[in-house]
Image 1 (cartoon, helix red, strand yellow):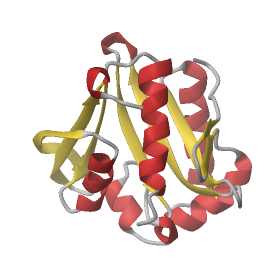
Image 2: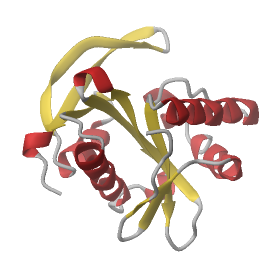
Image 3: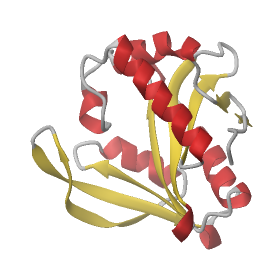
Image 4: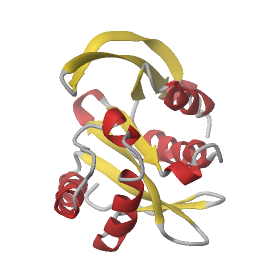
Length: 182
């Protein structure tokens, strides 16, 4: 898959991030230090140059078929309010799911809605067998989003990632194709 499909939900459009999104991206990413604590390669503050490099990595991943990263937009406004993506492992027919959403949009069900669309794409169009995600223990809200989308707790991964000078534990959630219902 060299092109990124547009996905539509009741309230959202998920499509390819563009240069026009970088202002909104920076606004949200720099609104709180929480993003740099929970996302890899996101410092606080995040500069316009770093945002351009982030967009280049998105494009390279999409063009190579290694990952699919979507801008999450409210249908009405059309502005970027977050991102969601799959990092593909075609050999093992699985993908790691990652996402973030602007703070003003938390608690409104947008991520659950976006996850449902991406899970459907992953299982029905990309023929993945497994989609999984992790969250740091200090971010249980992310785990609740995973559970609402149907992912099941797989376990605690001790010292799985080294971030900000320390090894961090994560909880891992996953969904198998055989358990997926669209």
